Length: 311
Image 1: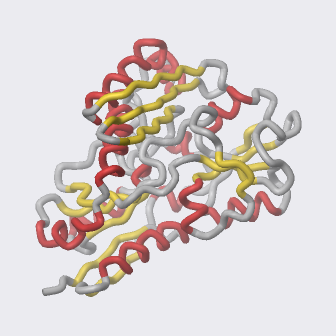
Image 2 (image 1 turned 180 degrees about the vertical axis):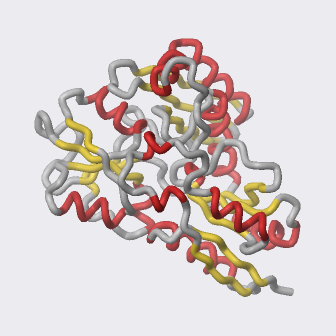
Image 3 (image 1 turned 45 degrees about the horizontal axis):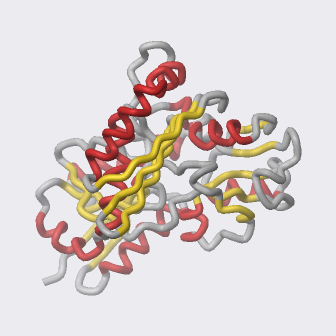
């Protein structure tokens, strides 16, 4: 017997692609409808994300609709979800992961190395900015907000020499025409959970959980559990200069992680392998904090400021 399922989604092109992608997978046997919900993060478009700092700013309103029963499931980019969910919610499925790396998009330049001295690069991610400045301190990094289309349009109109976006979003929207370099993890470590889609439901909603369980991908769940354990250990969110990339092969996890000062002057890297995703993430996170990561993060948020949760 099929269910009537309402999917809660942000209204951006990418969010709707994601919601429609899930709806298409569920429509055999279920009646599916998408409900657009406007979030705080969508309403504040003129400020760099790191400066907004609101907890769950791309998820709060969607979770409120989920709690109220207005929607039955929510589709998120995993990197937007706080590392700790409220007790009334659970991540019921993580889809097979798209490429988690970042991409350099440009009309005229083929790579970070080829950008001219003093070139203007657009990104509103502190993580990307810090790692970019570590490689090329001469580059000028400018804030860049808006959906993928808006950002590409700004690049095409000449406002920037290059911009940095997630490969996953560009591929999903079929907008890879300006991708000139998929940036190696060794140069730019991705955000924890980047490229992964998460389906959030009300905790204990077994009917919905059973309906979507076939979408859950083991490798994606193991890798992102490890990356998010590192992020949680370091007290960080997606607007902190922390990168994490776990790869799972033949029962063994390899984790590469980085924490950097926003100006790129200090860059700490750590990598390790293990079998337990949470233990590995916590161990690497602890090592980074001990080696100076705690000091870097203190400087990002002001001395002794409590670290904001991931937006």
